[in-house]
Image (cartoon, rainbow, N blue to C red):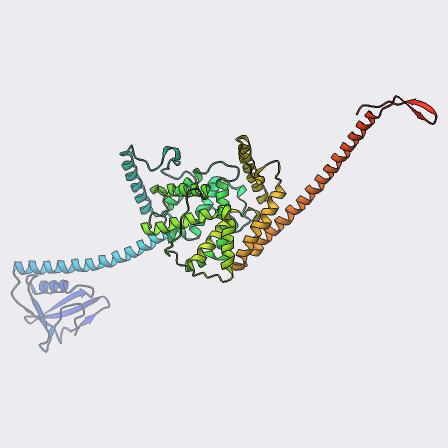
Length: 510
């Protein structure tokens, strides 16, 4: 029924006995083809057309219509009266509506694709701690809060005497890029914090929070984390020992234990949101530790420093109770009580038991709090000097005020070896060896260094004892010489016989 090339079709129409040739592209729409046929017939473009083949069957007017030839099978067009203006307008409207629906479906598909891609990008940004939307929201919230607080000049949640460091719009410490070597070193108990400045330590702490997944799992705003860490730093006093560097070392040692013992997996399995009924101790019990709790939650009470702001009040209450429990566990006055409790549980330890897990966390924080001797000698020994200096400053004040002085703080009675041997031998090693029953992997990394440190200080004590003995003997010998001279002076006689000869004896002054 006709001829056609690959891109064009040729249709022959029988128009009142006259053969009319029509050529069109196979990509034309049915409407375009109908308009082309109307032009060939010399009728209006909106005239209704229908085609009949040689057998009288109707032929569909579209690019796929069957072929025909000039001599045989020329199609006969049948036309009816043209449609009215309203009908044409209605058809046009319908056509436009159909096109709009088509576009709408395409737009919906495009929107779905864009939404998926945006969700993927937002997830990546969130994981990297740079979610712009959240940062902007945080800034707006802070701005509103400041305006509200400015309108209440007479309200303040802290006493003037306990006011914290003013918060900062943008954390002032720069973001350091940690090398892979530093990242690996942070996971080890041998990490040397003496080589790092405070700003660098803040960046290391920030890395630990991200590396452990805490920022993601607890939905912590990265900017809030920066502010919180900076506020912790600013509220530490410049003490010889209990300062921000000590805080960093305790945190880094806990990070090291988590990595070494896979504690993250263990505590993940435990019911993190378990409801506890732990008693919180205050008043005269653990005054320094209670002060630390108070400062910590004063910081949390600042909206721009509260890393737990995404938790509901009940969950935050449980976090608060757990935090207080662990801070109070660092009071050495409770050392024996906590360690004895852990020893009773360790042989049949149940990682699904709430009391067992609480006791384990208390012992682990204690280990990290007094873990300096786990580190290499060149890292640990300066900490001993700092601690003794802090002790001596306190004992000097107590002597000046006429207060009793603890023997282990008296600079006249304490030496470095005597201070460390007992502490390592009777406090550190027993506690770490008990933990080793649950986590044998700490023996080489933590327990063995403690044993070597004990042996080193015992050797130093033997040297000190030997020197003290020599000094004692020398003092006794000199005293005996002085006493002998005194007796010689008392028994002096100007003339004494010597072989029948009287000699005058001169006595030199001592």
